[in-house]
Length: 105
View (cartoon, rainbow, N blue to C red):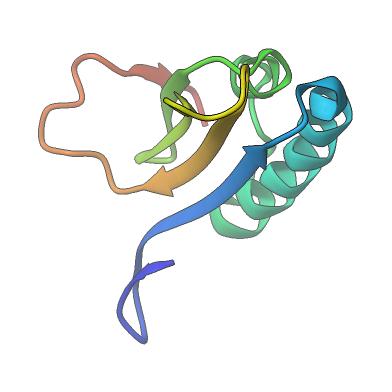
């Protein structure tokens, strides 16, 4: 959570995948938490584009209710093979949102 006492600028959930053999189960559980956060913060369901990105461990983003919703993957350098972090984020979009897809409300 980033922001102030009364106003959140961004909300984040992070999944660290240390055991690639358990990634599918971890991604599924992570997706459930992301759905819950999206529902509570934006009063809408998490779009299929983002759920698919979470399941596949790929980057994706779009605008929902004037908020940027994104999933990012960061592979760890120098660590174990195939270990990575997935970051789910809901935030105010930057001034230049032209590169982000708009999701109808």
